[in-house]
Length: 263
Image (cartoon, rainbow, N blue to C red):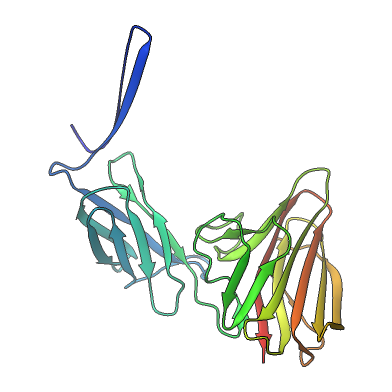
């Protein structure tokens, strides 16, 4: 029997049961392989020299070769969690899946780490998980609506791979996505810019406060499939909280990334 998965089922007199088996290579061990791509390049460029760690019952490591490919061989105990690291890039982990050839495959798009001070959602590690908070560089984003979702592992409709956050708007309705940015220590800061994207027109309202008093308001609309940077026309205004409110009037997906700040 070759490597792969096997399903066994049996029934008798109205009783039935089934068993799924994963069959490894001849010695009962498995290989994990794939490729690592730099998500910030267009066209995509492979990452040579990335470190890959695959962990099941046993663990193994590999380094991507001149073609940005890796292979971790002779592992026991699937499923396998595979983690990729490379200096200056955000570490990414995912569970590999078994291919038709009986090998476990995991390809990765990795993104450069966000430069501080900013909120680039580098701390979000679970793809398509609900987002309640995100923190880095001494700042925290807290969602005040429950519809925000993390995009971490894969490209989304031609956009660069994550991390970023988004929310969906169903047909025949309007949807609001809102979040608040504050300093973890409570200190004041300055809002510089953020990146927005949407399948169709989205309205934005950004309100900044200092000691509960509104000191800055930015309103407008955006209609761009690719991310566009929305800059603050008053980048030296000191604030202690920043409310980002996006309103989508038509069906589609709305995206937020790279909230750039200064102290």
